[in-house]
Length: 281
Ligand code: GUN
Image (cartoon, rainbow, N blue to C red):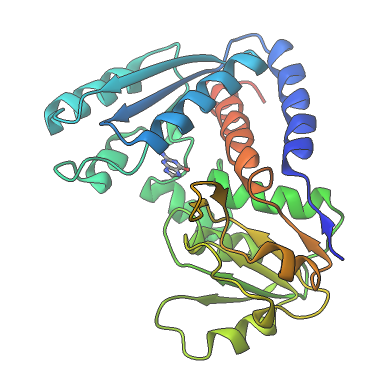
């Protein structure tokens, strides 16, 4: 039976470390979160981010803009936040309404305030291994692995999913830690077979029940990045949890695994941004 990686508990420890660091800083880190439109899941994420900031002493501003916000209005707000001395991190919650181009919006954020690490400058820095911020979800996964005492170097790691937010940067972070990394996606041939090679399997697909026990090697570490609803409307991941837990050595639950870590890494990135902008080493 797998050891459960308790993301809530690990998050709590890291948030206490962050709160101590914030209290000792000569400036107050500030985060602006921008939400456009009425996506209910996004509204919950934004509220959680705001609450988490307060709990560790980070100043936060939330901008809730209507669905029909124009490109000019959104870019105008970002320009204003880029200049604001109280704000060190800017996060525009994705997805955006269809009439707004996420690439253009991300490009408008000052790279040194881009606490999501989605701007091409930050993506490029991650690629060459000389980065200031790491994207929150993949960084959270690495921290869960590290704090559970699991070694990565030399391991076969398989990432399912190739999004810019999770799959691609996750593969890069595992590579930085000297893993042998395979990225799978919807066009992968022989997916189960590839997954069964994994010592560490990271699923970022977004489909409940996608990872079944036959795709998992005995003793593998299984990290579930999925955030789905099951047929009863309950939050669940990508992994068929009970059957896979019987085979894995470590597993992350949903909820209470990767989710809380994403926000924790956002807090960490906001502190990093504030220190860099404020010239604090
Ligand atoms: N939507 C889902 N995940 C994320 C994230 O990490 N950052 C932003 N900005 N939007 C998201």
